[in-house]
Image (cartoon, rainbow, N blue to C red; front, top):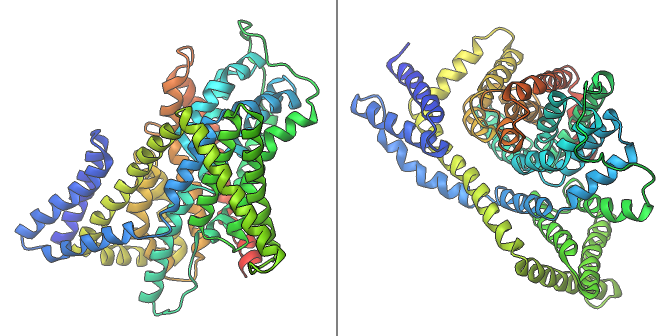
Length: 517
């Protein structure tokens, strides 16, 4: 190997050691390449003028309108998690499906699939599931290993079911990498890749994964040998229709509005994220409101927002102010603004708005810190000729593009044991993605494969974040070994789903082709 290649190997070894040492990932991802660049420059193997491009890359991140969707989707998830709607949804589902082990487990799965499309925040979802569903499942007779595995796996569904923050980040990276790879291959007018394409492509695979989980629960679930009776099991029986409607209708309408506006082509991902954040604020405020007048204004504002989105999706264009439709739209917008003000005031008084904003800043700061740090890594990697080294290695693999694809999938799966998904996206995609995306492989299909593969990183020991979140709030009676053994079947089901997507690409590409031609 050349001296530059040895330096690249040493840089990645030091990078992984830095991340595993416990220091913040952002510092490791940016600091190790910077130190490597200085050492390589002293040896005459790196041109430090490459680093002058770093401010432009940071500016590009700051002005990227697509990435603005990340804090908005995070805020949407935080509002829904703090509004306590999730607890009511799970209780009603459990009553509808009965108190048997299978009924209780399927209730948790169905609830998780629905809440995944509303929040997409792994930590909040897993902790919430532990707090509101673990004891009812154990009391219903679900074994503690099965309950632990189900909660950890179901809590990660928000990474593949849109709208997903992971898909937004992948859309940014895949779109840029595909454009660059195609131009280097001689195609100077490639079809752009959008987050809407990824949302459409991930919808069917997400439902397939939920279906695999459901079949597994139906086939294997058995009551535990003994169950606790310290707390009465959750009641079961007929649920009033009004309870079902008032509990499930608001989040379902919010999901339809957000996804529908993106897939219908009437809003970008960032605009739809803003719509979702406003809708989640109204839902949280409605749950907190006491006075009938407040609740009426907030409910009317949410309904007006949904009606406007549906009318726009149905093909009704912008109407002038001199028309009845235009005046109606202005009145609806005023009502929405009033509802947002009333709802924000209610949440501010309950200190929920302040806490939600702090959580959003903290989570978004972590994501963007890694995004900016990864820019430094990619810059030093290219300055050392790493892009050419990877291209030559991938070209020498048997199988061409398919060989490169399988190698990338294997690398991502292995990295999932030690790195977080966001770190993997901003390390692997810009460095290894061009070797896969320079040919005829669908970038949407490749992105969804990565998303399904990355989802396993939240479940694989020793650093699966879903396992950490579960362990932080689970009772001492459930050991770490119980959690690890419980998630193994779900990791295997995720790999089965990944194999299905590789074998049948139409599971990913059919819906985007139908919607966007």
